[in-house]
Length: 182
Image 1 (cartoon, rainbow, N blue to C red):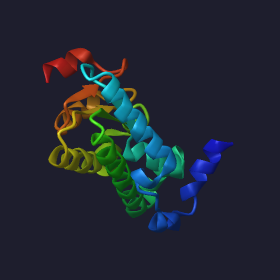
Image 2: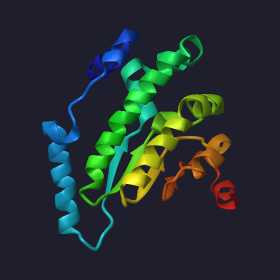
Image 3: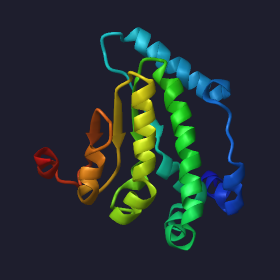
Image 4: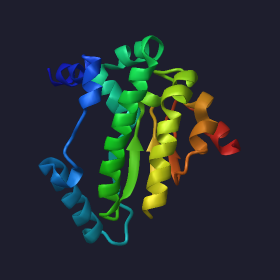
């Protein structure tokens, strides 16, 4: 099926060295997405319009296979960093193009929560890429920025709240009381 085709993209780890994609405005499907976002902002000028974009860890996990990339954090950490770095650039390029439409950008990185990975994996393989991504978006745009991570995030809550974002969406497994106290 389609999921196995996606997971095989980084089945050969050397594929990360050749990872490429069309710039968002040159990609027909993404250009349509940009047009729809622009149209939504124009149609609802007095409303916040949000667009969800996949996050770097989750895209890398989809391209490699989530179980395999978790094993790779121990077996081949250099590969994991290359993969997440490449996917961070993809997300940054997409987000910068989307920011030009006037929407609020919400990055969904569902696989980056502690229901799936450990706090150590988050801190070693995800956090610096989140910092880079949101830092660049903050520097280069005036867009409002949010982050959604699925599942349990209590062990990394302070890490998430240190990111230069406007909001974080808390999932049901995490403590709203703890987040409010931070």
